[in-house]
Length: 133
Image (cartoon, rainbow, N blue to C red; front, top):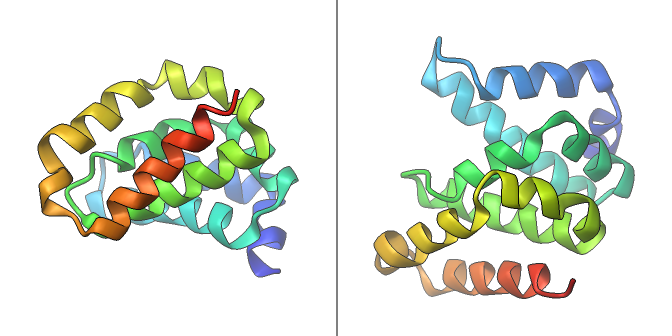
């Protein structure tokens, strides 16, 4: 419930998106990205997902797939799976714009051997979710 309430606050979402692109402090940027994923994963709310897509969250979630931290990769994959399950049509253009295919190729090509099988399974679930168009 907290994620749904927070995810409906337009001003908060705007700030979080702003922090996702900050160059001032990488810690703030990383945690802002994780907060976007947290809002999606814990709210699973159509209105929150639509609002995040409208505010530009897809870019940062796609970038998280190639993050150096396994936890961030997994959070990105889970949140993008939820987004595509709830709003595939609305998210498709943004996913393509921010090179989801390139991010997934990089994930499977360079980094897949470094992650646990469960995360690979989350990646294949995400791909399956995208293919349902």
